[in-house]
Amino acid sequence: MTVIPDNIELEIVLAHPGNSKNAVEILDKKFYDALDAHKIPKTAVSFVSVENPYYWYCWWWEYRHYYNSKTYKLKLDCSKHSFAFINDINADYIRSIRITSSTHSQIAEYRRQVKIEAMKAAKEKASDLLECIGQKAGKVIEVVELQEPVNNYWYGRYDVNNYTSNAYIPQTVNPGDNTEQSGVPSIKLRFEIKAKFEII
Image (cartoon, rainbow, N blue to C red; front, side, top):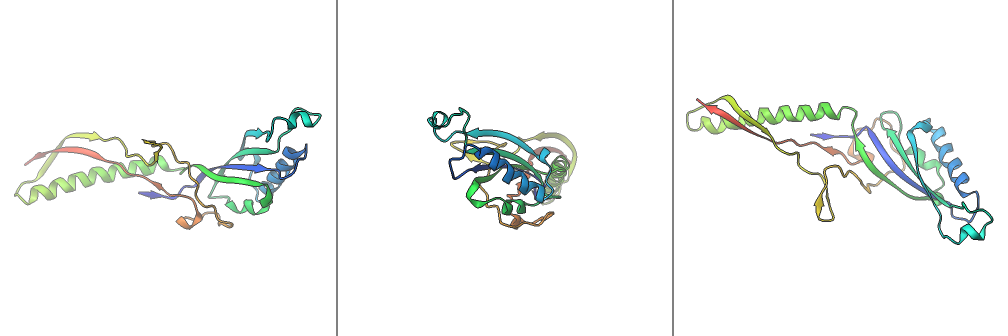
């Protein structure tokens, strides 16, 4: 089953192009102004880190807490909000934007549906194979849930939980857009079982 995510987590890295001692405050204002303009609540944002470009800047300025970039994590409900808020952030401040995770509010139900279809497919396949030799599949004897297949390959190892993506994020996306054109990678759900049936 292919599922279009309705909950996306973005990692947004903003950097001030100048050497202002108030760089972080400026970045915060630009960022939160953009969110306010699109009615995205501040509670959707979690602070990650600020970064000092060069250690000696701490001593160059009188203050020892000078930073010029900041990383935000934003959890976006795609049924209510789009990526359009990005347009309201000065492009000069944007260092990178990427999708770090995606899911769907009904993902548990979708997984259940896929498992049910897998069981139905197993019985149907058994019946088809036995029919050609004049026999039928009877009651189920054993059902083994196989490990769900992995989705990503990363530096020599598979990782089922790695949904990090450098997917393209378009300039404008409409809320509730349920197409791949939204720039959000779809979630692929696949489930496999091994089933044994009585032959009658």
